[in-house]
Image (cartoon, rainbow, N blue to C red; front, side, top):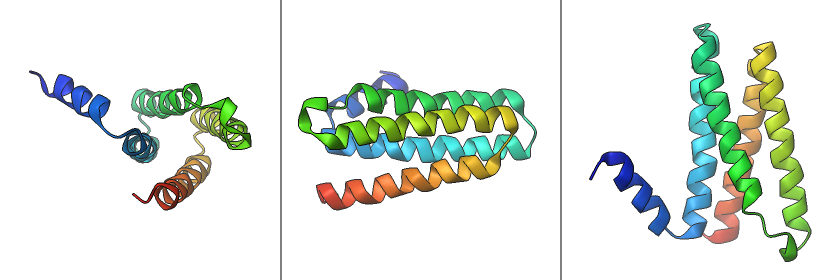
Length: 118
């Protein structure tokens, strides 16, 4: 079994609360790579990692339960705003915008841990 297949199997079998936490942590990881790519003037890597972070936000949007109340609508708007911010940050090479998305994501991590007891 390849390492990718193993990691995918682990992700699928994890507690859904832990999986959401891992997704948020993935955003932070990819955005740190974006910042490095910006500092190195590596356009290809910058957009590769911006796209990976955006894909995570898209997936988080896809799994929201809108029947569960207003929080889902709030998170949907928040995720969409982070996506828009990352698109603009990539085009403008705006590391401050990337830092802002990282700050918001860290806030989501902290709130998620508090809410779920992780």
